[in-house]
Image 1 (cartoon, one colour):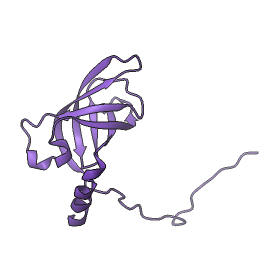
Image 2 (cartoon, rainbow, N blue to C red):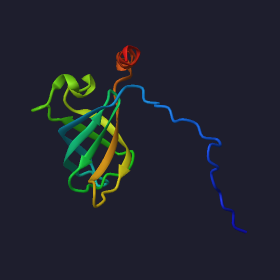
Image 3 (tube, one colour):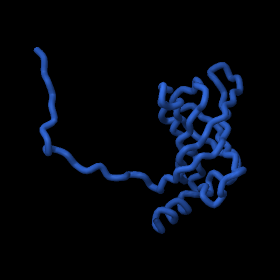
Image 4 (spheres, rainbow, N blue to C red):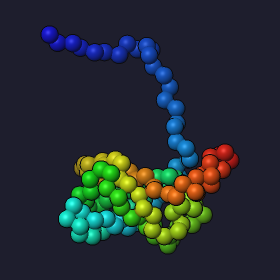
Length: 135
């Protein structure tokens, strides 16, 4: 037996709310990812950060890389040529440990993308809450 599910127009449609804790900022900043592969070999990739916030970032890889989900990576932004005040404080301090939580495959129109969750110290969370309160 086959079932066909359809959405009726206007039914059970709720507006999607922005659930982000902090606001994402559009940037185009060169960055470098460092991680260890499954054999323990250190790997590097040059990427471009496209949007950033206090807790995460999205980067595009000009050449595809093989990084699985939940792999821990070190990310370091190259602040040269950009406005450092536009970058979140968590990313101005050099290398930041982060986890890969989404991998977008490359297509003919756009490069491979990685969504990174920054692994910040919980003691710094009040600072993020303060940013959220002022936004």
